[in-house]
Amino acid sequence: MTRLLVCFLLFTFAFAACSFNRDSPTSNTNQPAPGVTQPSPAAPVSTAPTLPAQADGLQPGQASGSYTAKGEVVQLKYAYAGRANRFGEESLVVLLTENPIPADAVAEELKSTPMLDGEKIRGLEYVLDESSMWVRFHPGQYQESTSNKLKDYKLENDVVRGFDDNDGSLTDGKYKRNVKFVAALTK
Image (cartoon, rainbow, N blue to C red):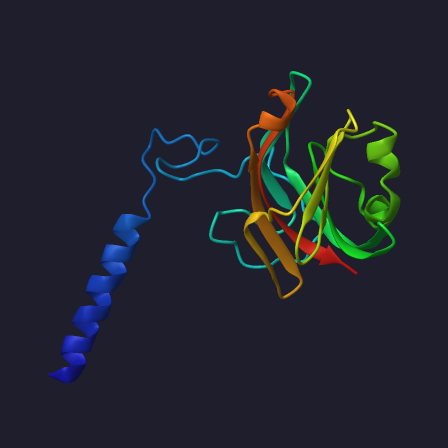
């Protein structure tokens, strides 16, 4: 009796599984099934190791938001972080850019920003320490230093994340920013 019951259950499960996998005769195999989300071709490519998604949905190497410099709005998509010498001491440097930095140029860009300074790419450069934050706009070279820290700032397991929102009140709105980022520290 038990053997008969097991056979019946196996047959029922097999039949149900086959029923769910049937294609309709009019299905187009080049289109995703309804409700299936395809990855965005514009998603940032990260040179960082694959780590779990952060609470805000960003993966390491990604930024979201924009900055305004003299009326021009720049969308930021990429985030890089590392240690470099700034202001005479080793500091945490974060670069947020609109276009990716080639993998073989990231370390040099964190060290001395040749692409940002040469206006080959646009973005924000942050220098963070325990009690303050410095940010420079590229291009434009406007810079700000403040005792305010990034919102939701966290450095954990060699991943730095934060949120910066500045309405540009010091510059009559010429320079403002609203960005989130998650970046793995470059070794």
